[in-house]
Length: 532
Ligand code: J2J
Image (cartoon, rainbow, N blue to C red; front, side):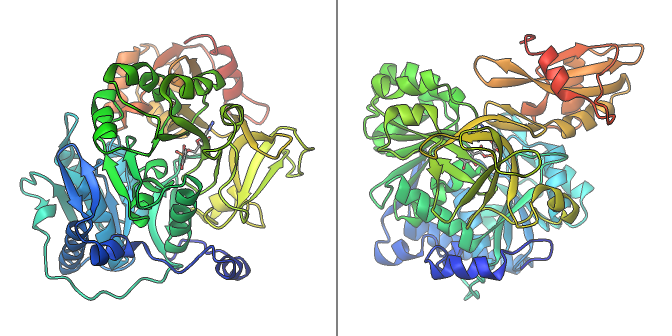
């Protein structure tokens, strides 16, 4: 396995194989069976066009050969920052076929995040769109190359200027060796626990299992159409079963540019979408507007998770839209627990259901790692066939985030109900969940401290009726205190993604500290619970 990655111990790997959980599938084989048996079958649809399995399969083969021609090899890391487009699918499949490893960045990431990802992964290349929502990603790409010497290639989907156009990387298909299914296939970015967000290695075995098992649980098959309304670079829309799971099943992946009703509802109607994923904040918007658009959602299953979903909102989904809701607790790390489409509506409104597979082991523990009594709240620990055994290249961090026997400490507070279903009740990790977008407080605080007028700073969540939580920077200033607008502009200039910029600023004379001398963020969060 790639240096810096932690394999599952042999006894677990053997058991997962023996039980038919890991079947030796590789992600580079996506598109192949349909391209051979039913070439004109539609694989990917956007507002701009329809693409067959054969077309995308051929493009992936030619791009793979072209990338090999550029010198990209198995195990090379390639930061991929592409929106929901056929290029995303073709690029990832091409890299999978080479055995090169996509490092998936979100479209919202800016210079700071991209430099971090490229540096951390030792990337040899970066793939970006030309322009997206007013941002010139070529400029970001140049900044990454200037900062990270390993990045030799800047590939651009669209107008490349002096950089390399993705469409021009094209060569006659090569006969490439199939990667080992137990090898790492790509990296997802963690929502974070402490410190900067870490990279999550996902293997062919574990991710193809996730694709297959989530599709089965959602009853998604070759007749299904999955709508990606969230960014495909996020685990929820990528692989639960998401776009890759839809393609693995021989169904259609419908790629929306955004979850806005005027973008998604026409696609839902024309493509008879059967499955999609949403963050809770968007659900009320869909419920209010589905009627206006006259869209029939009675065939649609909606997966909702990533942040707290209000039971009252959940209960309204079927009566107002006819759609079937499933309620998810998910992590890019591979922990998945969710209600199934035929669960009782009240179960769906109030729990996050049961784990993906019987091979998933969940524990709920107190702060001494002892299992709590049935029904009590504790931290969720998880181990299983698609839950990572270690973040990439951070052995010290791994020693604290995993138990000695390999359970991931999720940092989430949960309980199990009388039937054993999971109920998420809170969080102990230093992450703010801004409508499903995860903000690492350590990361933002480090940038805040670079401001000349900031003496000390803490970032805490404040309640928000729409997003659940927003961010508040609590700052002890030098003589000339900055305004919120200045702080936001400063952090934006430092290259931080917009969703991480503080929503509020609170100036204070001193921060509270815990007895061990750490900023007492919990006390601060309590103090500011009313400031939204
Ligand atoms: C409260 N917090 C939740 C829930 C996740 C499907 C769905 C979501 C994600 C995801 C995902 C929550 N209520 N129902 O990858 O495949 C918070 C927890 C968790 C963190 C993980 C998927 N469901 N959360 O959101 O890696 O704090 O994955 O640890 O982005 O989201 O975030 P992320």
